[in-house]
Length: 196
Image 1 (cartoon, rainbow, N blue to C red):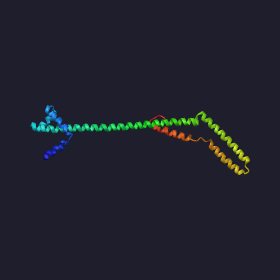
Image 2 (tube, helix red, strand yellow; image 1 turned 135 degrees about the vertical axis):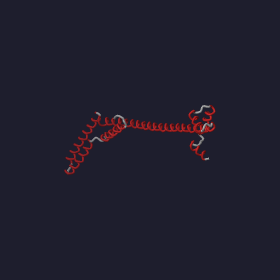
Image 3 (tube, one colour; image 1 turned 180 degrees about the vertical axis):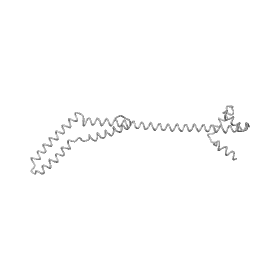
């Protein structure tokens, strides 16, 4: 009883998957196409008794086939893990490529907007016209307030407010923000391996 328990533990037990193994071993024994090394070892440990040698051969061959099956299963699992890792890597590369394309489109859009609204000759011309118009309005308003006002202190206060509004009207709104966004986008593009 103890020997059978030890033999079963040593051989890895039996499982439904072992039926294929035993069918293969039966075929080997029937056809005489046994593993010569294992057969010789089985005879040696069985003191030359053919019946014991067959039993020992079946046990050793089943263990060898289980081991081979486990190696194949382990290899298949490792291959699957590697395949999943490659798929994750490919998905990440695709995500980065899409992000890079999106950033490049945004970069082109901001470049175009900066050109249209701030640096093109037409934009500079519009800015000069606006500045000139606002300057003329400021001067005319200041002169009107100064000459039409009866209270000199109130006139100076009104002209001071008009002056600050005039200064604000000369500022270029949005250019700084667009340039900062463009700088940030270009930094991210370089970080992703693109060329900005």
